[in-house]
Image 1 (cartoon, rainbow, N blue to C red):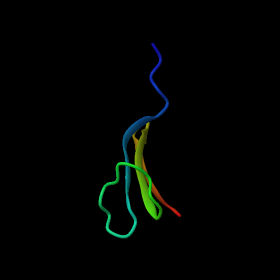
Image 2: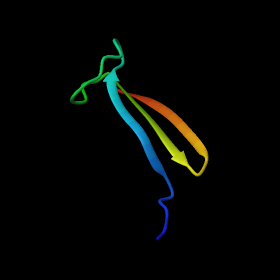
Image 3: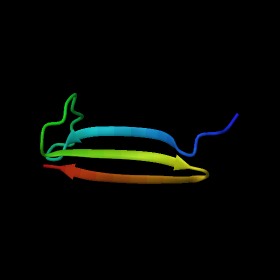
Image 4: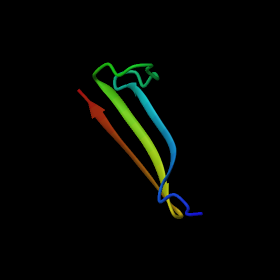
Length: 49
């Protein structure tokens, strides 16, 4: 059985102003994620709106 190329550690959507977690995307929102590829963990974020 093949192993997946990437493994999602977490995905988060939060208010870009308060950093409070959001149930739905309301701009300006901060989307953060961490993905593991092999032994490397990649972390990124982007502001929407």
